[in-house]
Image 1: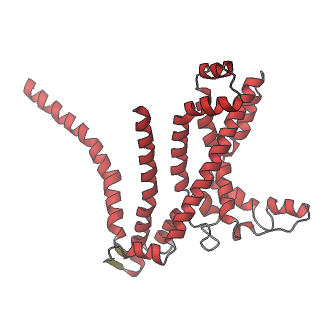
Image 2: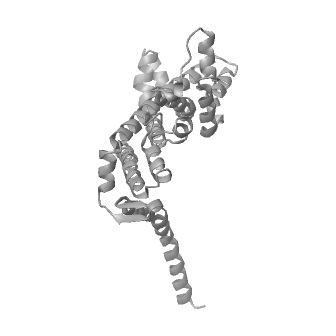
Image 3: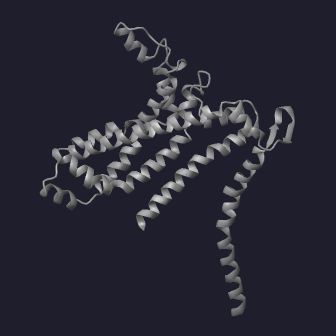
Amino acid sequence: MTTAGMGSRNRAVVAVLLALPLVYLLLVYIYPIGQLLYLSFRDLEPAYDTDEFIGLGNFFEIFGRSGGWGHVLRSFLYTGICVSASFVLGLAFALLTTAVEEAFAWPLHTALRQVIITPMIFIPAAAGVMWTFAYTEHYGWVNHLLALLGLSTYPWLVSSAAFYLVMLTDIWGWTPFMYLILLAGLQSLPREPLEAARVDGAGTWESFWHVVLPMLRPVILIALTIKTLDTYRAFDYLWIMTQGGPGTISTTLTIATYKTAFMELKLGKASAYGLVTMIFPLVVVNVYLAFAQRREA
């Protein structure tokens, strides 16, 4: 083969390789999102052989008659409480582990770390089933303890407390994730600024607030972004423990989307729910990128 022929073949190979990411974006991102957008403008119900263009009708129905605003607010409430509590507890546990490691020569911190990360052993489905049994009215251990104390039992998961109990389970299950990220961040911090702060007479609180926290900010930002995105699309604990009930007390956008698509078989309306659900993660990612770029600048 001539040199010109080999050069032409190499250019063709390079062109194909450069095109592969574009093909991937088209197949995995652009086409599914475009299809979702297309279906959101249609009244598509396969069970009734219905498929017609209705424009923004699905969105008007969601935010008019289907309680869409309630689903949005519950999604934000669930995300805000779970992320905040997991972050505070994870940071507290990370600081405690670091303090124990510095104060004791023997590996007490290793045992402490194992205890804190124990909830990560359970997959969310198994953890959801476990806590569902715990809150069951007649044979759950929570009501059993109340009975031993002489208190009346309570139908936890079919009451107004159900939504908050699912939040408590989510916090229990995902605090170890925040803990491990923040602990790794703490252990990677340079020691010189802390030692200089102690020499200058700074106390524990001043050192943490003015030295540790600013150095830990990039790690905190990454941890909060990942946890916020993951919690916002939470489904497993909510579905296993309450299925969005009782009524719609614990119905978030993800639960509403699933019910609309696979129980009501209203695929057009479910697609509209899917588009609404996408807005918040896009905002979070762009806020994170803005913070990251400002820090680099």
